[in-house]
Image (cartoon, rainbow, N blue to C red; front, side):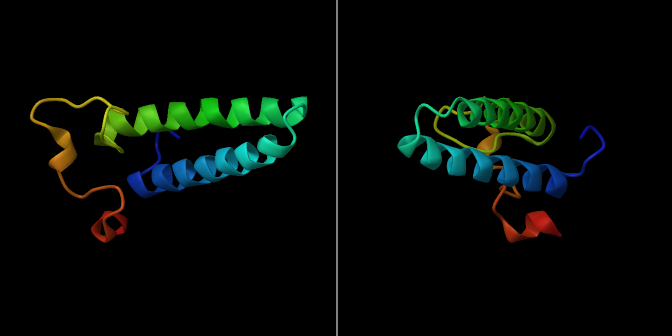
Length: 88
């Protein structure tokens, strides 16, 4: 992952986020499934690591206290993660 470009890292974040959301929904109905809990915890750990690596390299992905910012305030810098220019 260290050699990945910005779009590759975003794709990995999207994949891991999907896996976490999907497992979260499953676990809402199957809270005693230890295998699913372990998978959720594993994907969640990976997701946090990938997000932290992205933010160290490219700046914050989200606002409102989920990530720190350097000065000047990085959140207003472009392109934003969802900006179509980001993928070019």
